[in-house]
Image (cartoon, rainbow, N blue to C red; front, side, top):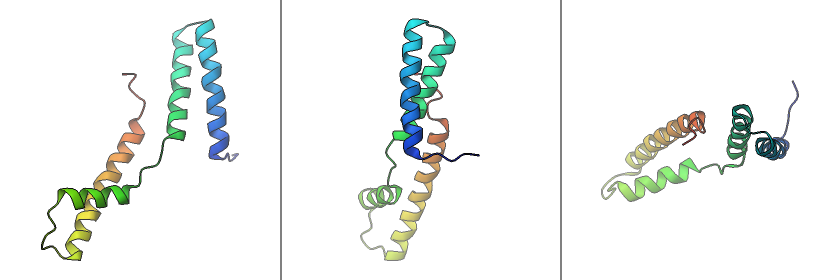
Length: 102
């Protein structure tokens, strides 16, 4: 199986979006619209910024949890829990991303 760099996949996806966009304008059909949408979703997924889940978890804990008398161990537990929840959400969101055309 051949290996491709992310940059190669992005470039190919851009070409695919352009190809299917032109094709859909020239010969509109369900198939060309579907192929265009698939190419757009792939390109969006490849070029989406990667969230810093650790920083987001820390920010949530610092801003939403009153840590007044909490020791560092308890704060670390809060951060770990928030990180785990955010990561699970990100995985779920990523696996279902682009399924809806809404």
